[in-house]
Amino acid sequence: MRGKAAIVGIGETRYEKDSGKNILQLASEATKFALEDANLSINDIDGIITLSPLSTSARLNNVLASYLDIKPTYSAEVAVYGASGGMALKQAAEAIATKSAKRILVIGSDKNFLKVQSNEPQILGSAYQQLFISTEATPSYAMAANLHQHLYKSTDHQRAKIAVDQRFNANHFDKSLFKDKKITLNDVLSSPIIAEPIHLLEIVYPCDGALAFIVTSTEDAKSITKTPVLIEGAGFYNSHFLFTESEMFTNGLVTGVKRAGEIAYEMAGIGPEQIQICGLYDCYTIAVMLMLEDLGFCEKGKGGLFVEEHDLTFKGDFPVNTSGGQ
Image 1 (cartoon, rainbow, N blue to C red):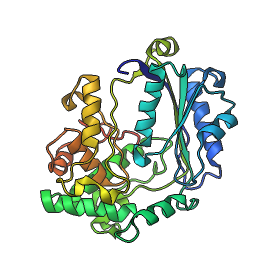
Image 2: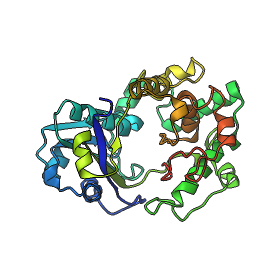
Image 3: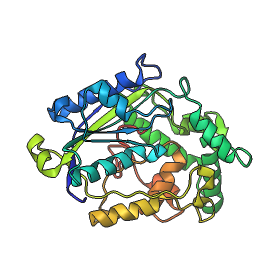
């Protein structure tokens, strides 16, 4: 797969608390921007991969293909929660490498799940683990933050800096939900504690929005754009269904990202010392800290110090989530 596929166009909507649009409309808008970026038309697309939404139990790949008038030779939906975006890119590259399609549209579209939500994910989660421990994300990540503080002496201040640096990035991205809302360390640390020790401003804010990108072969990409983004390596690893089952709670907070990263590095033939910019899943600040460690940018337990010593903004020495993350 290495070097056989590339991204040639990307598009995204504005991110809003309530856009007044449904999932298909948001997806259509992001698709339009991605096609324009690549100077392609919908007739040039013959594959589709969608990300499973949180606001509904509906599967989008077939209905969205029909809505957009795509006649795919390859169609799939990826449902691995926060890893879905990266997994969809990996799956698209694999499909391109096997010539299952020529140009694949990858798209994630969702509504603010605080306002619109199917019961299916909650029913499954509750039936699976309700008798043992909370299935909610915030208490689960709070346990990880508490354990990191206990084992490695990280601090609230260090996690807060992650939120501040990423908000700085969001302040410079026109489509960001929080473009006009700056925050300081004091703002984060004085925001309400939702689950000890996690503060409100350390947590993802659900919203309406969609993002799409187009993946094709490296040869085709060179005919489409002068700046294709080649996919050099990708990895995936999963050890559990619910967060509270994760082996990280018994192995010193080593997450599955470590194994996935090792697979990607090996495929690409590089190591962490050659990475200059990162896009990390940031549902909670502690997630970013753990990934910085497990992807090899610092030793396990030193993520807090790494954050203190580096500027994570797009102007800094180690940019992370340059559009502002979540």
